[in-house]
Image (cartoon, rainbow, N blue to C red):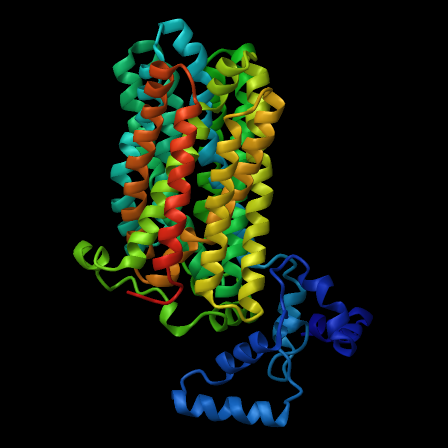
Length: 513
């Protein structure tokens, strides 16, 4: 009690009470735009003061507060909540909001998720030379990861909806780290063993994206979700950079086993941190301040609160709605283009422009680094548009259109690139603009099916993974058949354009299920 009294009379706390708006950045500078509009705070007060009341009584309270212009302001704006001082004191001691800690850990997981994939995309070049693989068989090896990934998407999404993302994700990271560790042994043992281990690796990684989207939808209010997904996906794209830059160095100094052992060890370290520091829902966290919990809950419509007790809808019902097909086609197109560039970019620079493996890694890493930045920018822009009154439907359509038309045009121009520098610039533009899809179809799953987003993600990702298998293998056959990447790049660009038209016609930001 004495410490609380002394804190109340300290100069910094008195200054906090006299000028709450001026000092809010000191206490909450690491958050996602606290106090960005008055409506948000009005929702927060109503959520805390009308707990347990009928909806009609809540409307009366809201109207009365609007008429009387109550002097109370929410704790998220740096002032006291309900006239008391407890929440303000709690916020003083909490410099980083709990939901920010969750998104940072999620971003680290996504970084490892993609880095573990990219290691094989680089290591396959010396393996192909050593074992004498053709371009077509190299595509089969590259796609083996997707053989397991396609099966775990639906099952993983359903498990996330039922048990939450924390436990499912922990098991997923542990298992794919084990598969990463076993990859060098499998490669030295036999080609069949390598294909089986990579398929198991994909099986474990299939839970990553459904777990991420479900967890972030529970931990973040609606108008912060795109930014949270942007941060997590920035980690995902930075995994490409880390994998592409570190793997050639470690291959040349430590041999094939070096990068696989490193990333497997980092994955197991992440699991230990995640298991003790995160909960499925913010209300279950012992560390979250009450004011932050109110802010999260007040920033969500009532119908978006997850209800894990409800069974998933039938697949027939899910596929009977055109907005579902808009998401499925968008996922198919996104995975088609993404895995072509992910799996074949180092090979493209080596074969088309005759650069060595290290140079190819640098040229390949640049586009992914800019994609991480542009993905966060797209999320922030999406949240801003929603906060300023634009409908969720129009925002999702704008973001997805940028995410497909931009890459399509860039890939058409890539056919005319005459130097590796020019090709790298065009690939950078393509991938930077494709990251706008994160604020399009990836978030749209939570919009149309908030209670079943994991299951819907699994269904759409299953179709997207099948497309990725076809595109990854197809690229190898096209290159072997025509001796050029140009034809396949043109096919991919046309697919981008066609899917954009379908998305504009049938996508919606309203709840469907």
